[in-house]
Image (cartoon, rainbow, N blue to C red; front, side, top):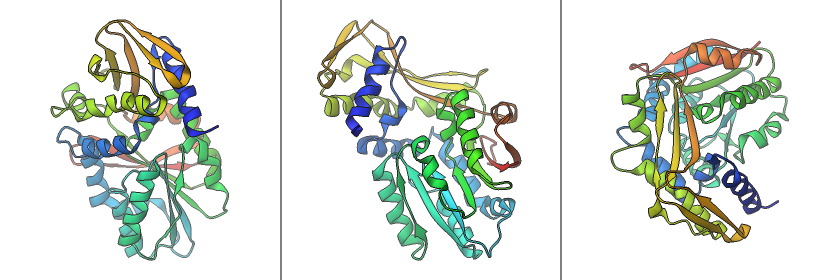
Length: 317
């Protein structure tokens, strides 16, 4: 099955469903990567700077909590590596403290992997880097073929893009591969008020809007669809009590869209929504519930100064 075959299959499943949905995985083509870099620099998007502060100011403490042996080489596996801006602080501290490790960044975007690999080869000339392209659900088994000790890095609130049951299954699968005492560094956004959260997904400059609509552009380009972007709008929402932000594309009129590669027409009612992404916000109770039967336990927790974000150290029981 080619990449486009998978895309076609997923688009067909999502737009045939009621309610309609599209996987957030498909945000990340080259244009989507560039837009997400802009999102991370928006004044409203507190998530990046909050976690960056944790890694910038507390990497030494994070490393101490991992209980690593400097005499034993380990593999640092980052799932959803992105641009590596936060990770570089951890790598720098590991190098300065003479730890012996190989860095394995994993990302669905080859463009992101090329950027992070080139950047880290310049910053850390002798560091062994072994990038893996693909969805981390799909490549997870391949990452544990060696017997070397592992530290898993899963930051940027990527877990929050999964429904709770999928997040539970994913963490259980990681735990099955880890040996007793091995660690997972998990970065998650914390529950907070709508006035802080919602602007991060609906910014004044419209970058999050463009990021969401780029998914329709991609379908037009790669699947020969005929979405009129002017007839769809970005429609995010956040339920403060539940702690889940959701992004939608909303049809502004009753319309039909044809996807030539599927030879299929999809019908939209006025104000009908396409669900494109969730962003779950956590606290100790929610995370504890997700970890309940995973074989992982919370052993440390690092917060930014505003307490917007947390990096948890999870240990295999």
